Length: 400
Image 1 (cartoon, helix red, strand yellow):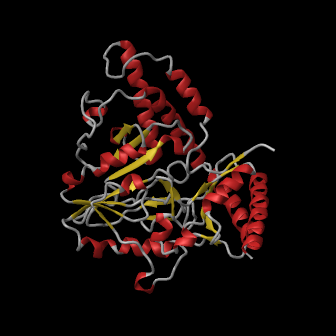
Image 2: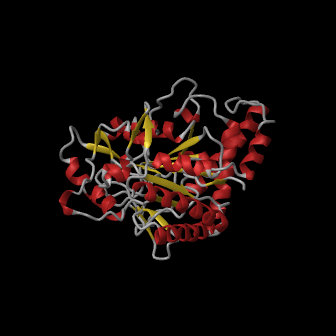
Image 3: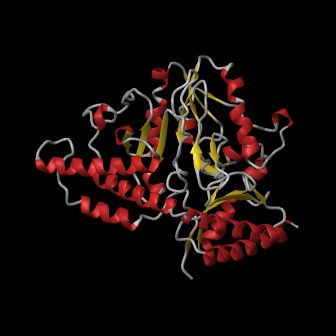
């Protein structure tokens, strides 16, 4: 039997469109900063990709700043806190690329205020609402807040990323907030439409759009090593990489034309898939997977099952059965998945995301993430369910 890849939130297979664009770009020898014909040809590829990424995320091409990764884009956004006049804070459920730069971090949930909702939305709503209280206790005015559109581990959309009744239109409606938002759309881009409320005018309290968005090529079928910062502010960000003044002075270093060409082609193809509703089919496969597992594995917890989520992401935990053990067992069985916990310096740690949502240490250490892709089939899902349930029965037998 062939292997089944179910770890698309970690990275995705390279799209054919991206591969073709990258191969073509290999024959373009010029430096995009050069003014001769060869340089202008390279510049043309760069600007074409910029327009393709802009079309995917709903901005103008000039607002797209290419970086080497979403991690670099996050660092560039966080560095703008002084320009916004205060501190940079992050929800405890944010990706580490944003949390690491936070001057302040909201406290984890741990059941405060008697809120026992573990469905996901209730906890995320609670965290967002607590921003106002948290703001009063920072060392300075809260200028920038990291608030992802969708969590990479659980797939749960934040309350600020609202879904229409049809389930097809997603609005990054940041709303009227007294601070600017750095929004991580790395997992959402290419799976759901990135749209805004019709009224995008600034108010006395702020902007209905985020100030910055970050995304990565390899999460939507592009190559690794390319990302972008989307700048919705009226000011150019202060560069953290200085030297040659590329990217209109916003990020120095000769642009990775081959990777960027692949990014643009992947973005355009991803936008077509979203418009065609292809991810709705994937959401149905996830439903089959979760229902199949839930029917047989009664102690397994499906995180955020009743919440608005990305269409492809399932995070579930069987308390006591370590996530890393499950990943290894399923790998040997021919399935690539990931654990909800991470290793650091040889130590296994419980998922920060699940701990922040109020799950105990044992449960948070027992979570795995299965993330589907457009090539995932129902046969793949049923094969995985059969193999996982076989391992789950053996785990219960040993634990008895």
